[in-house]
Each structure stands twice: as structure tokens, then as C-alpha cells.
Amino acid sequence: MPEKIDDAPLNQPQELNSITRALLEGEVIEAIRQVYDPELPINVYDLGLIYGLNVDHQGFVDITMTLTSPACPVAGTLPGEVETAAKNVPGVKDAKVELVWDPPYTLERMPEHIRLELGLF
Image (cartoon, rainbow, N blue to C red):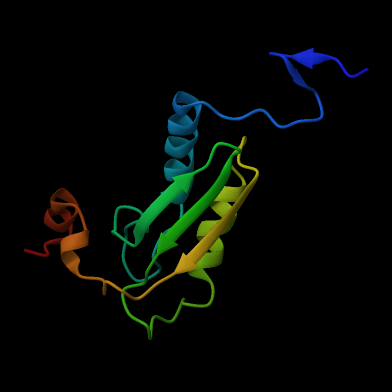
């Protein structure tokens, strides 16, 4: 008979509570902040390219992102870099990135303090 932890058999995955999910989401965001757009000195998260990030109760991460333009020269690699960064966070079971073009990216997606730093006002 398998041992039990918190009344769940060892072979069944433990669900993450809301606090653990929030902490894991923060760690994923910090990992994504290590991925930089090669044309700008800013990471893809602060650039506003991440439209959505969801950590489910099992530790699976879904990310919705865009690029500055459909003709972006790193369109083939940047989403994969984001996905790899998320997958490498301890506690993440798997991560998937969906690349979307709607709504189109605009500079307003970038936080105001980043726009100020880049002189984009």
C-alpha cells in the first residue's frame, strides 16, 4: 500500500493552492524577465509582449504572447526562449506559449517607467 501525504496517495499529483500558484507565477515572470528582445535593451515581459500567463493547479503554465510585429526577425525563436525559461522554473510541470497577433502590439503595453527610460514619450 502506498504511503499517504495529506491523505493523498504518493502516486497522485498534489494540487497547488492559490498561494503556491501565485508564488510560482512570480517565479515564472522573473524567469521570463531574463529573455530580452534583441532589438531593444528590455526584457519581453517589461516590453509588454506577454499578454497572459496562467499557472494551473497542477503546475502547468500557459503563456499568451505577441511580438512587436509579425515581421519580427526573432519570431521563430523568441517564443521558444520564453517557453524554455518558464519550463526551467522549479515546480513548473510544463509550459506552452501561444503566439497571438490580436490585439496588435502597441507601445502603450509597455509600462510608463520603461517608456520614460527609453525616451518613448
